Amino acid sequence: MNTADWTRRRMLRAGIAALGAATVAKVSLSEALAESGHWYGDESYPLPVPEQTPANLPLLTCAPALVNMGDGKPRRVLAYNGQFPGPTWVARTGDMVTTRLQNGLDDPTITHWHGLVVDFANDGGPLLEIEPGTSYDYSFPIVQRAGLNFYHPHPHMLTGEQVCLGLAGAFIIRDDEEDALGLPSGPYEVPLVIRDASFDNQGNLLYNPTSSGFKGKFPLVNGTLNPMLNVDRGVYRLRVLNGANARMFRLALSNGAPLTIIGNDGGLLPAPVMVTEILLGMAERLDLLVDFRTLGAGQSITLRCLDARWDLVKFVGAGQLGVTYSPPPVLSTILPLSGPSQPTRSFTFDGMSRINGLEYDPNRLDFRVPLGVTERWRFKTGGNAPHPVHVHGAHFQVVSRTGGRGRLYGWEGGWKDTVLLNDRETVDVLIRFNAYRDPYVIHCHQLEHESMGMMANFDVY
Ligand code: C2O
Ligand code: CU
Ligand code: CU
Image (cartoon, rainbow, N blue to C red; front, side, top):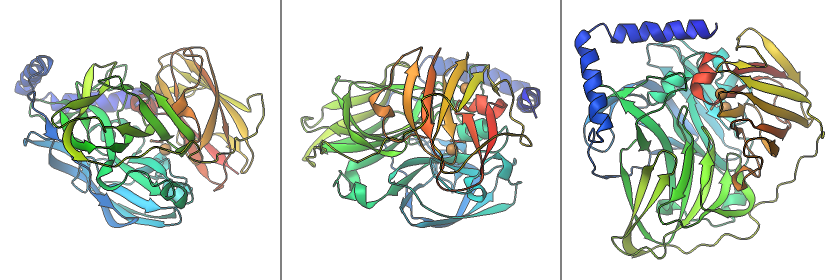
């Protein structure tokens, strides 16, 4: 399997879609409407919060579904249990997660629990994909700390398409350490799954990647266009997940007010960090505190992407009193890993489909890593960045970035499972596999790069 196979698969589908000539004409009309900014109107729609599910969910079905993205028009997507995004799992450290994935798609699929440290059989990597009409049983304990994780499909060469068409959701883990902080909760804790999207002539989700990956024309937050949320005068905890295939978001508030970062991919940071903007790579997560105490009734503040010039979510003051919260100076004690000062291994992310010159081959094992030993891994870009580098099976600590932006950022502290490698950058991480002696993958989370082969198998022994 190589880039040519992947491209053929894509071309084949594009060809099938174009068989009706009328469709082609309508696509360009819809694109014109889209460019004019009136494809779905200027109205705001209430931000939905995905339904929650506990650790034990008997059935997780992936299948086509019609969903409402706020404007009431039924739009076709691929959905987990008919929901877009899928239900938010909420579980605690020590819980057993059990579910049966049912493949109701026309293609192979498998679900990966991005950020969860699980054994091979439960990791949902590309070697485990299942055929249409079949199912897969998961059963694994949660052996890690609190944090916001991400579940999505991971079939060989189809991840980008299936995620873009709607299969994704959040997975929240809670633990005693986090409980002790008494963070804003209930209506004051809001997951924000942010992505971009494009629509076909029927208004259904469209997957039309280009050579720089899939770039949608509109933002969607929790599956909704132009979302707004009524907020009380208080502090909110926003759990942000970049669920886009190939788009980074440069997040900021419209009034320039600070965002307080308390956590990221791997859970709580050692200490809160205040910033006015954040560059969030694909698959990265954030735990933010935002203060709306001075927001009067009817006033609004918007969470924006400064790069795309998009309004992502509009927070509108409801006037009622909310909760007051200020984080303690120490959120969590995180011991820095001590490891080699020279890289144990280096990975070059080359072109759009290779790591160290090689495209992914499901049958090739690229390297072996000893369990329980801290290694220093060096990630370099050979062009075509951004490459958000993601590792299955362990979390890591980011220790340096040279070239490009030349520094580390407040949201890259603590534990991470994905680190952004931008133009000309070299990033070093310390990593130690503690849990399972099993095979895993490392890959770029620009999902078109991943699907074209920027991924490698390794084995923990
Ligand atoms: Cu989010 Cu291997 O993926
Ligand atoms: Cu993952
Ligand atoms: Cu990449």
